[in-house]
Amino acid sequence: MLDQKIKLQVKIIIKKIAENQLVSIDERIFIEKIAKKNYEISKELKRAQHVRRKIGKENNELTTFISELSLNGLLQEDHYNPKIGTLGEWFTNAPSWLKRS
Image (cartoon, rainbow, N blue to C red; front, side):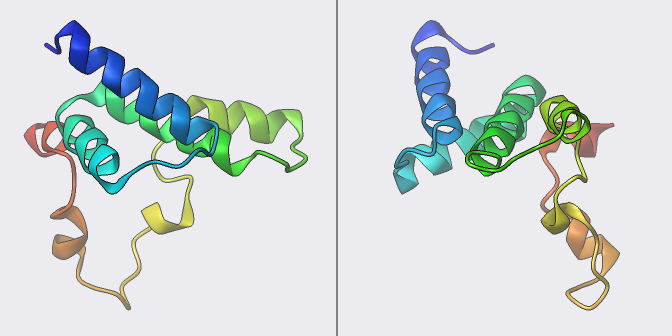
């Protein structure tokens, strides 16, 4: 469980990401560490990244709906590429909550 101070920091960083504002490397590391441990934060972070990507782009309703769901695997970098590495290496960076399941 996150305390109120950390929750507030997380909300601020996620809002900055969604609005395409400058995020420091320390903030990025902080949010990534928390997202690896907490599925809800991970989901909100992915949603913010989708919002940032669609700024200035014209989207149809279906694309907007799918991006707001923030499902894993929608981004090209989330797809497995056998030319880059093995399947085992690809799963080594999985968040801890996923490894437990």
